[in-house]
Length: 143
Image (tube, rainbow, N blue to C red; front, side, top):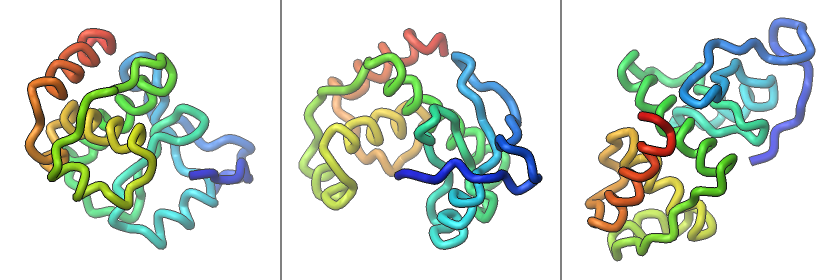
């Protein structure tokens, strides 16, 4: 998803960094264009932005624990993208069906891996191959 690098909501030229996550991945405020996206899509909890930062949806009603899980999920996606350590595992039939309209298979695999990593049950039933990838991802991320 491309979002324009526009003026931030606080009038600065860059959105404020909220904190650094594992591997110095920044959690930042949304750009105004991301803010508009999140307003229209409140079901999207967060995203791994194109600038390799994590952004949470300010319009979602997540608990503090759920926000931490989304931060973990999206930081895993950024790490995979930055490092090139990307999953090539096979999806289950249930996962392939559930994520059929999600995008390219590489994006689906990264989504499934990040959701397993963060403990999100929407990854569905994970295989041994998927768990092995996530275990290696944890090791590489230092988690």
